[in-house]
Length: 71
Image (cartoon, rainbow, N blue to C red; front, side):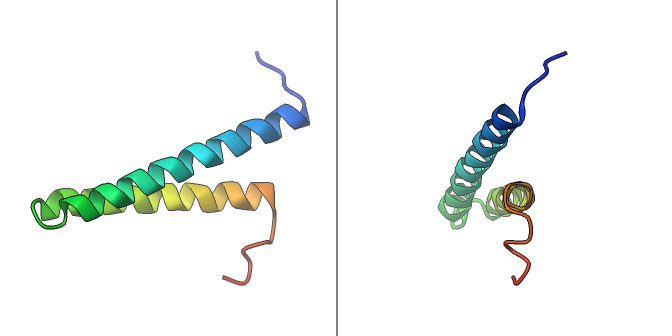
């Protein structure tokens, strides 16, 4: 079992958020690129983009609770 302190946990969450942000951007760009030639692929890419956006929102809430409450 890997035991980590709170600083290491925070770093891991921040890395996970950065990774999710990168994936969200990549899937969003892919959706735009596929729009004309592959509408079904574009929809799938858009759904994946939204999934990563949800992950980012959850991680944001873990990192800064209540910050997005007004959205």
